[in-house]
Image (tube, rainbow, N blue to C red; front, top):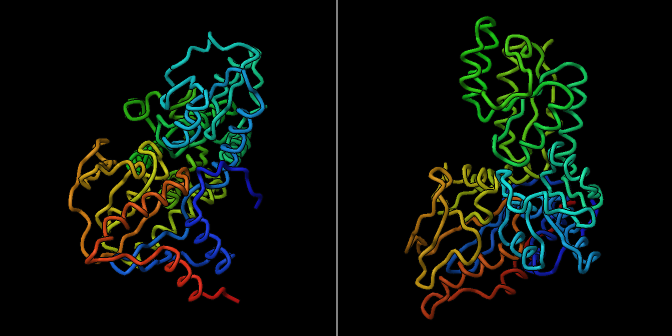
Length: 408
């Protein structure tokens, strides 16, 4: 896999060292157990996979290339590059402006954009409608297009199915940028609809099997989530399921199975190949860490990051879990500001770190390793006192490296 030119301030010598050693030990990615670093007063588990994925690194490289190649020009991002505040704030500090927020609402009116301006398409992609508006202005939307290749793979699969008169069922969060762009592309080739979860999939299956006089129930649940001209009594006979690539992969498969049971094998298209490898790896690594056992988990990332919130969701089923943006989530007195994914609100916790614990620290695909390192150091600092010393990081890393021999 190719390497990307990522700014050094997003990198971490500690995390890079751990990742390189794990890759050396397990090049085929068959071992999903966490890395355990013993600091004496506290043991830190780092999940086997976390941090920037291929698509995110590609997007960051292209974005900073756009800045370097266009001094003096106005540079816009269609919306957040990725769902991580550290990355987006750094781009803003370099003069990049946003055209939309994460819900698609205008921040900078498109009427202010001129043909000589630079517009970066984020990793989530762009809807065909927005792309057409930018092209009509004269903007070259392809020059700095950072759309994730795995998102584009979903679009291509959707287009193929649409041409074969399948209706595309998109498993995703209806207001998420990626879901909106995938819907736009899928609807251009045929008919499409969005299903948010298994409960909605079960309702859809019920309506499919009912067959007649289902319009009222269908539109009560799925109004605003279908392509133009959608007829539930006609367009639910042949279906294929794709996903917002950051959803829980097992849930997408369960939804596909539910839909398949309703339409039968002849009316169902197998779309398993659209699942994102990075999302899959991160979720399997999270489950591998959970199986090892820890006293609590700290998950690092943007609060609006879908893939990160799903890691939180997996962890909190088994242990106390704290979702933080970065090391700045700690106040001077040790109080932690952490995000509740269910209430969508911040909560405060004090004295939440137990004595002599094992702590799992992980992140989603949009979190810089540098943020992970600073959170790690924040945790170590809590345990580092005269009566309860913490072993030196270099000593711990070297000991871990020397005691782990690569597989043959």
